Amino acid sequence: MSSSLHPHDPEGSERPVPDTVRLRRLNRWQAEGMREDLADLYVESSVTPPGEEFRGRQEFLRRLEHDVQLPGFDMLVAEAEGLTGCASGVPVPRDGSWWEGFEGPMPQNLEQLTASGHVFAILETVVHPHRHAHGLARRLQERLLADHQSSLGVTLVDRSARSVRAAFTDRGWQEAGRIRRMPGQEVLQVMVLPLGERTEDHPDGLTHNDRTQRSE
Image (cartoon, rainbow, N blue to C red; front, side, top):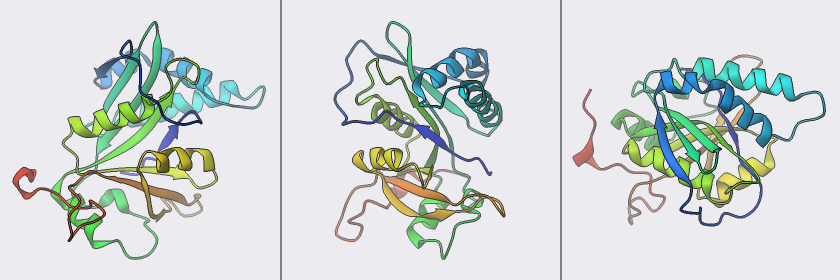
């Protein structure tokens, strides 16, 4: 698997999401059926130079077309009076292929969690900046991770996107290294969200529950 991740979050502090926002799960076919609406949401949620909107929209559609083909693809959309946000992701394969291109030695706890089958990658997060935005990105991501009984969430962020990295950090995500997916490609920042119980042996929460070990 070699999918770049493109989270897009509004700036600003997180606040509770109004109860009027409803979350709905989409499978790959439903996501493909909503591709134009999702692309509209992306354009409305992006800060792009004049004249670049079409290019950004096409890039989003290209990523979506690729991502829906990945094994285990899952998406949540948030709706109020209209489409307000979305988040998508896939389970990380237990064979460790997701980590190819990781710079330096792989932390042992990340290898163990990956082998346990409890790591889920957030591929894309898009939230409308003017409608029910505060706290929605967190809610979408945490719901996806909970639905997949994950012990660890992972995502990749453009290292130059400081506001996005800061938004993830504010929600408890931690920087855990760097990945270069392909030769000549930019280096991406790996960010992880530990969801395990914090203990004396694992104060960072990077552990999994053996009782919920996934079968092969």
